[in-house]
Amino acid sequence: MRRRLIPLALLAAVAISATAYAEPPTAHLVIKNRVFTVQELMLPADTKVKLVVENQDSIPAEFESYDLSREVVVPGHSSIVVYIAPLAPGRYNFFNDFNHAAQGWVVVDPPGQSKTGGRE
Image (tube, rainbow, N blue to C red; front, side, top):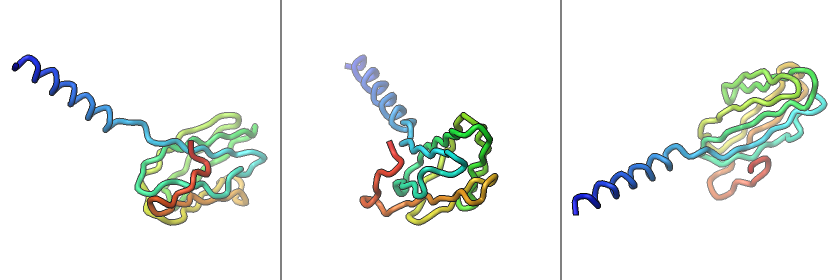
């Protein structure tokens, strides 16, 4: 009886660990012709999100947001990953610091109301 309990306990621990380290949902943001192709990026509330910012231009851009405390250069024809901590419902501004005309918003709706724009 004791031999069965140990493997079951080990299996339960592995299952809990796998759940704790599950990959967060991914959202995509594209920079093309020096502007963001999505002006409003919809994200779920209270959820950590992996944001992939792809720069399709040949010149560098900078994903910056005072609201999200992020500032990352995105070289031309490449992408970067930014993790966004769980956010409360609201609107969070972001912009290309190399072209201030390029701006957008992360929009976080209350749970159950989030749309899927930009999410996978």
